Amino acid sequence: MSFYSTRGGACVTASQAILWGLAKDGGLYVPSMFPLLPEDRIFGFCDLSYQSIAERILSAFLEDYSKAEIREAVQAAYSPENFDDPAIVPLKSLDDRVQVMELFHGPTLAFKDIALKLLPYLIRMAAKKNEETREISIMVATSGDTGKAALEGFRDVDGTSCTVFYPHEGVSEMQRLQMVTTEGNNTHVIGVKGNFDDAQTGVKTLFGSAEFHEKMNALHKLPSSANSINFGRLVPQVVYYFSCYAQLVCSGKLRMGQPLNFVVPTGNFGDILAGYYAKRMGLPIGKLICASNRNNVLSDFFRDGVYYTHRTFFKTMSPSMDILISSNLERLLYESADRDPKVVSEWMRSLKESGSFSIGAQRLSALQQTFAAGFADDTMTAQEIRRVYEQTGYLMDPHTAVASYVQREYGLQTGDFSQTVILATASPYKFAPEVLAALQGSEAVQGLDAFQCAQKLQEMTGVPIPKQISALKSMPERHHTVCEIGEMQETMLNDFM
Ligand SMILES: *Cc1c(COP(=O)(O)O)cnc(C)c1O
Figure 1: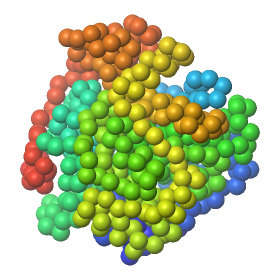
Figure 2 (figure 1 turned 45 degrees about the vertical axis):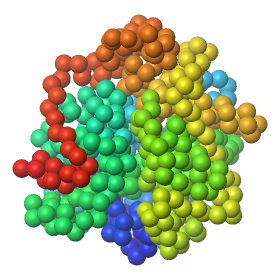
Figure 3 (figure 1 turned 180 degrees about the horizontal axis):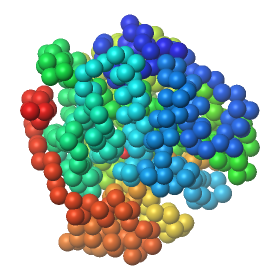
């Protein structure tokens, strides 16, 4: 299998797509085809561990990695030291129709760990295969969770460094502390005085800058990306859709072949795109329901076929979804345009020049066969956290609660009450003040810091505080750099000196 750029031209191997991150023409790498898994193979996943399913899915895409290499990477990434649940992505029932798939059992308590624990192995192997001797300098723009997961993934990994740009004042206190306390002598954390889109655009601009590449080359460094624009981030996420389906079939909650809906709290469109890839590979997915917060650019897109970014950017209680430019949508657009890179390039040009593009009624209605969408603002999100807790005893983080709200609205509006899985993308303790306020009112958190809120939340709900959160309290802040939007290049290069 080879990989193309969504904007034409490139034809590269899997390891090259993973090593380089973004195609030279600014497009994203996409697989030349979707390997098909027949139902009896999916049924066979019933007897397999998460790791074994991962090996099979990864092998289907990453043809220039040997089976032994993939096994080594998977076993190291999904070890009991990294994930505190043997299922890796355990399911919890809310009722007899709706399950929650918990994707936050890794070291940084968000779903990003599932891909970012694996990616460093894939990148290091890719460097070797392509005889790359320069240091692989990972650059990441984060809306809160990718940053820490990337730092933990690449910390002290030989031959790599990791620089994270996060929106200064745009992440939760726990998210900030997680990043700025990171140890390791190859980690760099920089606050950008802007929002996530500014940070992401800044990183993409650096990737496109010949001057920057020259400067990095002079330092014997090769820039690469650990954002979900890297194909190596996507393919590990395809795995849990299969694992989830198999778990439900095994436990008798689902018949093999029965359609299953997934509701995905969405920002950069990576997680839900992995679900779309799973469907294209033959997994019986009914609808993929895209859940946004008040930055509802995607739910408007799936309603009107128009992507429109000239709108107010809102800071919400689900900061990892505070995004207006969803990078991975480009990969879906490529499929929607029948894989014609000229059409995609034209939409992207229009987006850059006028802040919007339109895909037309026919393509929209084709997408609506697979995708539904909705959004929840902060009031609805807080009410949902409380409703779910009071009715089921299950404690959700705000991102997951956005999805839960959208799930209920979707059922009421469409009458589609299929078996459904909500993707739980973060631990509620990453957002303890917001979650506590949702349960007890804003007075309850007055004057309390994030740790005191976590303590109260534990006392109230009995859900234990993860050790990664308690440990943060005594860790010194090691990274203090903050820069203007226009200074990302110099600041990054300075940090290497
Ligand atoms: C990153 C993130 C999301 C959004 O995922 P995308 O792949 O960017 O759509 C949702 N929830 C949490 C907690 C996240 O960290």
